[in-house]
Image 1 (cartoon, rainbow, N blue to C red):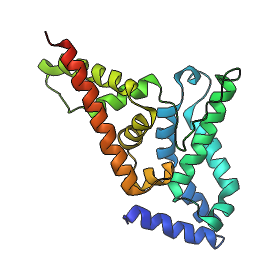
Image 2: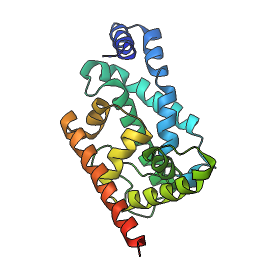
Image 3: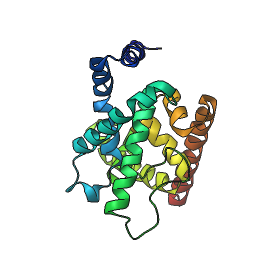
Length: 210
């Protein structure tokens, strides 16, 4: 357990004892992570209407209303619980603004959320080795485009495990809690997703060869 985790646990115990300041501090310490997650998952068609900071505030308000129940039951580690509230809020926002006359935006598996194009580009860039020299920038851009195309061809569950790990930069334990599987299951899915991604990239490169 990290020092950050120890501090969170200490705040949880104080909040369970009725310390209102500890409850506020507990919610506030994850504001930045929530904003990064919401920014990465918010459909860009909503960008002109919805500020991620406003969505974060709504999520924290939801969390504050449900904090007593959470502290009593502790169904998930604290950040995965907050992220679950954020995911539910995002699904409702997408349904209200984009999918009102279409099928539900909710996914069949827990933790699944849409990945906007800009976030897919960022994920692709994080999956390739850094190439910073000017002479290799064109190659890096081409490789990023190939990785993005391969990501789009992956099964949704594979793409999601990579997004959680490399885009949201969650720990194995956090991903396990979010997806409702074991940590060993997360590791297996992660390895399989990378193998499938490499396979798609290999197939793509072979098609380019004369």
